[in-house]
Length: 427
Ligand code: DSN
Image (cartoon, rainbow, N blue to C red; front, side, top):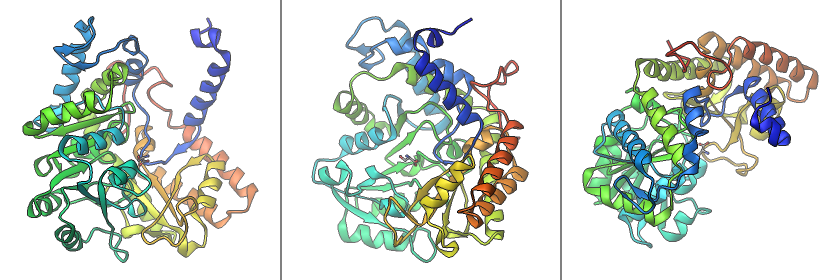
């Protein structure tokens, strides 16, 4: 029988089939990507996409909220429970919107914010010059220590004392080490700043208690929902009770109209999945896999920023290999290994053609891969770096990648899982 999509839009159906095959037949190492469960996928594609729900449970601007109110309350309670937060807002369309909402909730235009510089591993919305956040607010940027690749908390404190920001942002998109949120909280307190912690990359590790939670040390915590947390693409805010009203008002009506209820529903499902021993096992394996991959890359002579990893990601500095990041990422992609090129601290090359490669283990771990497969993947990366212009070798590795993928089927939309086991990976 033809599916509705196949029948009514064969072009899109065909493209989706191709994307499904790509996701299944490649090693997805972009650290911000993952595979959601079948249940999350179902919620995302549900009838909730048909509903407007501007406002919050019990106070909406449209009728017909008998079900949406219950779903949003469930999502909120689940978020509060797993992150041990006073308040949660689950409506942000993305992590970027969540960050801007955090600023809007507590700051005035022109106030000073202080975040990690983008080429040193920060995010656009942490005050990078190309982002509106640096135009609306006065942005001061800190960097990682160029020698160690790690935060020098004394220097960050000095900078905070010099500029007296109104808000300090902890969190990163390309920082392979555990972040000490308590120190960030203390620095913020010492200069009378708010502390926003953006845990988009590591929220799954925080839920699993692998990395210390910033919730006790931050006024506001923002996160995306689709990285290590393994939910649908979306954003979320957690905060102390005293900021709850400001945060809610900043999201709606400050920045957004109606929440995307199908996404919010899928977030609720993902939060429930994250509240299980299986998820904790998965998150632990993500980190074990990243360490195994890092160790093997080091053995092959790759330079890793900070010398390794404590989390789900690895930042390779390719200068010693004399291969630019973009060239390697493109060669890897031809061999069905999907990564992203990335700046490294003090990168002499431009951001669109930088010296680094960023890789991570959330997606391959969801497929059930463990340490032996990480060693194999490091071998693929090494062979490709050594044979960057040799199409025959790259094609051969592509075949080996397909073979490896065939032993680790993608959970979620690809297989009918046994009852009560719609997620995969981990111990
Ligand atoms: N695009 C995200 C990442 O890959 O880290 C940050 O927004």
